[in-house]
Amino acid sequence: MKKIGIVMGSDSDLPVIEKAVGILREMNIPFEVHIYSAHRTPVEARDFALHARENGFGVIIAAAGMAAHLAGAIAANTTLPVIGIPCKGPALDGMDALLSTVQMPSGIPVATVGVNNGANAALLAAEILAVEDAGLAAFLQQKRQRDSDAVLKKDAGIAERL
Ligand code: RP5
Image (cartoon, rainbow, N blue to C red; front, side):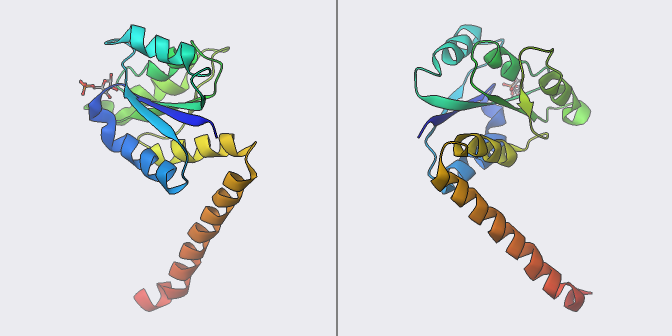
């Protein structure tokens, strides 16, 4: 199976990445995590993206906050699918990172999930790999069924709680 590359702009983004890592572990998907910044370590971020395909990655998740250009910078240097996670910073409730990540000009796409939504980034990355992996697709379907069952269980108990 291809690996998922996870890049965060700073270790202050770690709580968001931990949600993604938890889901990838649950699904036994191989991954690698790095701290590369588009502005503090631009050479390393570029090199990672340039060689990601030959290094066995199938999807890259890039998480960054504030003027979050990491996902776009990674996407500029690879044709692998890149999923951007805008991280909430100290100002603007994450709107700065959301717009910086989602508003990529035409030609270099970044599939952007919600602010701080590491879980959806991991699930989307898994769905991309599952296009060619029936076992992973089945696992994803079972997970949805479990989530659905949990909601229906809450529905059955809601009248007693009110
Ligand atoms: C971005 O700036 C990082 O992704 C982080 O979300 C934000 C702040 O970084 P630190 O100052 O906490 O290292 O590059």
